[in-house]
Image 1: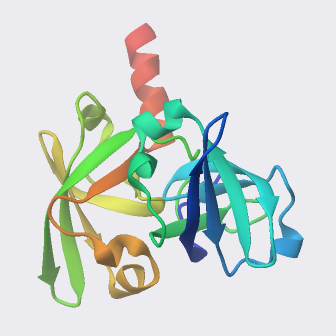
Image 2 (image 1 turned 135 degrees about the horizontal axis):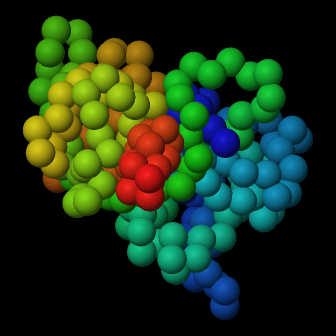
Image 3 (image 1 turned 180 degrees about the vertical axis):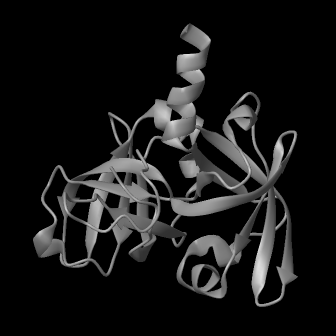
Length: 196
């Protein structure tokens, strides 16, 4: 489990096809001595398992299923990635409860300055859009955000300067593809209503 609070922006160091899956090596500022093989780390909102590590990098393997349902299929060497280590019992929940299971890929429609912040409008894939509500939570590229407004399958979020500066969201532009994870509470409430 994660909270959607990015704790490092890593960089793809290498991409390699293996006889099993696709392997990414990620450069990071994390203290690798404190990360075990088998640890879960959120990569732009996608929970992946550490399979190897070096002094300033770690490796993950990504299945075809994950590549087909996330933006990871387009990752190339040099790409910057929002990273978050798994939450521990007793950690502060600064964002919201995030599973690290990407629900779909959104498309950024616009990015506009608004005071010192930036307003970003994103189109969510159908039927995912029905789980997104004004003032609810959503995870975009692994970042916990509050939904400002929703109009059909388009929603808006406001990025304060801190978020803009310390995550990869400051690189967004119209046409960018982003990993989305809906609020877990919305998912279970909708499922309950479908089966009640």
